[in-house]
Length: 486
Ligand SMILES: [Zn+2]
Image (tube, rainbow, N blue to C red):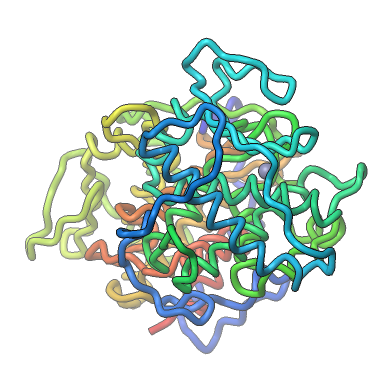
């Protein structure tokens, strides 16, 4: 996120488009663009499975998989990695022949664990020293991972499902090569989308309890998988999983994952360059560089507040006061890192918690979050409760949580400038491409407020959270009330 270098005029058309539709019956949802994922996901089920927040990670009592790993250690991360690869391969042993008509699945030839902080050595034509990464290299049919930094850091931020997600995705590339899904002309975005889709089909198998070593809950477990997908990106054969330069926004990645999760791996083979390009939001993100994060200080909070006032000016909301002092409401309600009190129409902030949320993931045990936009989106999530209140809508329950995500999405969408500056009527604040991915990762975090009601109760199903945020991002404020009512 960055300060805008020029002040932009408020554009009348954008302002008109931001009027919140108050009634339920009077609103119709505009049909534009192409459908996203499969239907509008429910708040309490995930592709037909009930949402629950049970344990995720290694199944207790399962015997460790025995696969040869070059450089492997007895450490937790390597154990998780090897058990993951074993489960993914077990899954493809049964799914591959049914899906691709290419005979039996052949396990990956070589597994390598390395420490990017070590002396390094040659692997697939690269030096592993300093390579904070995990990748599949087709030339040597090898899956490799950095046990020193990448996998432990991701695990610290996103939980035990993070290394599983990364390795299942890399195994997806191995499957693509085996099944002949790629040719020299396949665009990188399609390659990545297909690997995410194949990852989704594996996670369906895990969510149904069918994997030998790994389990995932359909609530916070699966949400952490989607969070990882939102946050990190790769370019196959070139840079690997941790490189932020490559392909697909968080929306694109979660859609692709959802196709595989809902519909199975056959669906992934139907992803073509034209179908992917039609759906993706990537084209909006014209800027390559990641912007640096803004500090959480009074100046930036004020920018955020101004942008919120502008975006929601025409909704009839009496703008809440934003206080940078922690506070609880008279009735005792207090949510972290920000609280909305309806009686006083105040949003009070816990600056320390916001700062943690604005800190990108790092090694060690210190608390960290996703970046500055992730923190500002928390502030916005409480502000839009005032917008809902002004519209006479309930502030509690799943519908309130989904409307909140949708309205935060709408605010975010108006902070994006396109190359000729037609959007972003908001002046002093603009989004960099990575900001939306930060926002989606924070949306999926078990501690966030972006899809939470006034009490801080989150909507359980991650797919539903993302869909609501995306709806607002793409279509603005209008559909938020009509789509989510109760
Ligand atoms: Zn990839």
